[in-house]
Image (cartoon, rainbow, N blue to C red; front, top):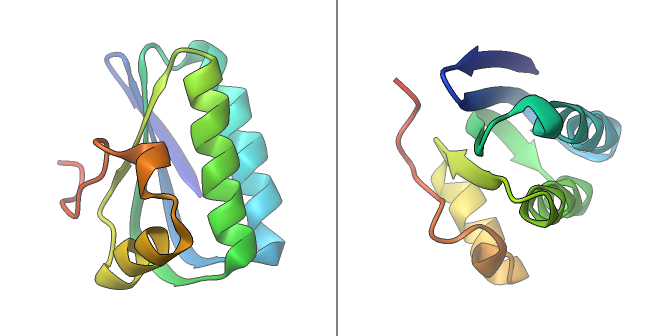
Amino acid sequence: MTTRVSDDVTVVGIAGELDFATAEPLSTLVKAVIPDAGRRVVLDLSGISFCDVSGLRALRVCGETAHASGVALELIGLPARMLWLLTISGLMPVFAPFISTKRQP
């Protein structure tokens, strides 16, 4: 996971597998950056190769934590498989309209 700040946007890049081993570190990282994030946190998921139910749960927790703090959490660079998982799991409303298949410039 990588983190970079640009203006009032904090971008968290995730690569590899989003599963039981990486779900908690992601949630912890997002919770840590929210107080200093300004109004937006962007999760760049373009490097995700696999996501299981633990990863989906972590994304939901991140979205709910951001929303409760008044911060918009955006998902960008979603591979088709991630879009499919968010759709069938019913998590699309947690993030919509902040979902994009494009990568952050």
